[in-house]
Amino acid sequence: MGRMKDGSAREYRMTARAQAAERTGERIIDAMLGLYADVPYDQIRLDDVASGAEVTVQTVIRRFGTKHGLLAATVERELAALAADRAAAVGESPEETVSSLVRYYENHGALILKLYAEAGQAPGVPELAARSRSYHVEWCKTAFGTHLASGQDRTTRGRRLAQVVAICDATTWRILRFDGGLSARQAETAILEMLLPVLGRE
Image (cartoon, rainbow, N blue to C red; front, top):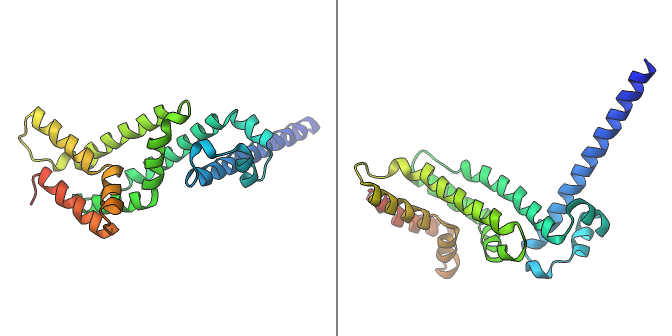
């Protein structure tokens, strides 16, 4: 009986330690994400990450190895969360989907574009960025493929899907919002004005 109690106690302590380590890892990633959103990657210091997470630099290194490893872990976690948000953006109609997509970019677009721009600075991150781009293509097929005009040959359909991918890209959102000075609502309207004719709708 005593051995069973001792075993249960050890298991509880091991579980508690694992949960504490997991929370520490999440705090470190949160601190890295907070810095990455505002600071060029090459200017981020592990000292600042550790300070933001309220841990030592040694703890950061022990958990993630290097700054590159930490960035890769941060990007991987965020891309998984963003994919879930993106999947939820598919609506019943193109109008609903574009409205959700613009809201998604309003929340995450700047971070996505920064990731693409700086992906080459850390090993492992270019592959994650490429995976994100592939996900965007597949999302566009899922969100709008059924709305494309029927009876198109393969070449035409492929061209139309490529147009959809470009119209719905985060770069297009940025151009409309910041280069063009449009409001989020105006950007939504502009995207629909480009997208609906491609889908064969007025």
